[in-house]
Amino acid sequence: MFATPSLDAFPHCLANYSFYNPILPANMSQNVVRINAPRLACSTAGDVPSIVARLKANEGDIDRICQIAGIAGASIGVIHEGNVIYKRHHGFQNIATQEPASDDTLYGIGSCSKPFFAAVTAALVSEGKLQWDEPVKKHLPILETSSKVVTENANLIDLLGHRTGLTGAFYMTFQGNGDHLIHNKDFWPYLRTLQPAASLRERWVDLQQSRLFYRR
Image (cartoon, rainbow, N blue to C red; front, side, top):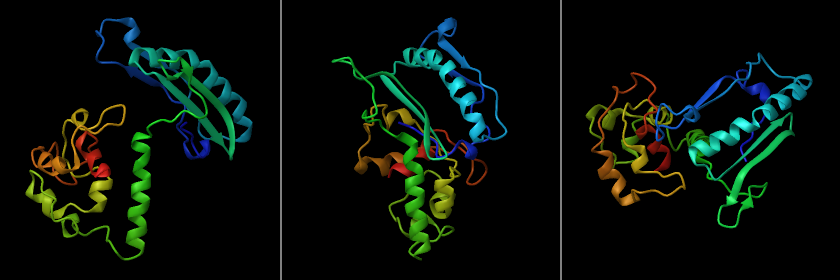
């Protein structure tokens, strides 16, 4: 279950979102589902009933999104001020047995693991074992990319902030069920084949490859 620690921390939550499945023909009307929910400047305890009502109003659309995307099951939870104000399970945790998704369903957390990695890195920096602005290659000699500039200068901030400029075929390395198609021993040779989409620190790039640094 995914939950926000406080809706106050996300002033632009409940915005307008579109979901698109590129696998289906573009002319199929069911290929795009749009959820419309007005933005909030902030949220207070008095806003909770309205927020819950809006979430419930979108449950049918979320079911459609799951169907379009081929998602077996999904669970949504929202926490406000330490209290669970909304919880809804969609689909199944086991398709074969048709067992519905529940509070006990295990999900791959995907990119939610990035803050964990960043927090551990920050702890090492606080202990003086690492420095934010020193080249990663100092501690990871095996690091080699197609860009000499990236190889010799990329630091922790660049890696954690998606600023290396490198990109690649993410779908070749990480599948939706959590399986890695490239083994650890093959990752470093693979990294050297990837071409940059931008120069180092030119811009934020979340084009597949930059995510890989979180996973190695």
